[in-house]
Image (cartoon, one colour):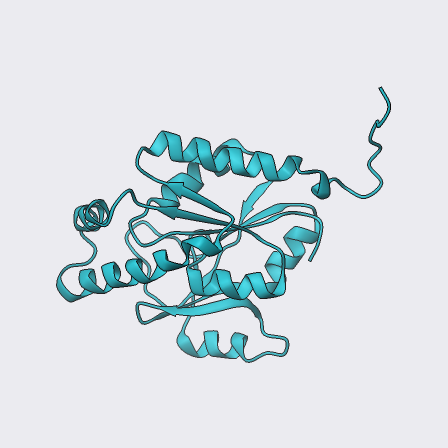
Length: 202
């Protein structure tokens, strides 16, 4: 894979990742979202093909079993399967687009083994704040909420393996931080297109 930059963004459930990504992607041209496949049911307001490709476990297994695998990465999270389509990502990167993968730490570590992504972790300011956000969201209660919190603790143990860490305490500041990361990565000298004339004498 070459051409564009592959950004991998992870966060525990309730970390505010989706909101931050939507705001940054609305502001920066040339940044596209890779729509993942999942076996979970759509949530209220979600649209097939926009938020996720909602497929059966049988279809997911068939894609995963292809050689090479039809997924760049896949993982089971909270009892549901999630995967990133390899062909879509390679096509977008090859066209020079910068691609965003919204995936968990399992998937991020898989992608890191096969490509050179920019890894970004978005964390809540504290476990107490994360629990408050999840309760306010109201999509899980009881044992489901406890599972989300336990998984969040596990995921945050991987923060040190990411290139960047954003603490989502204030939304506007977190958005500014992610935007700055994308712009900085685009400006890195090693990202310059081959053959681009650069003036070295002044």
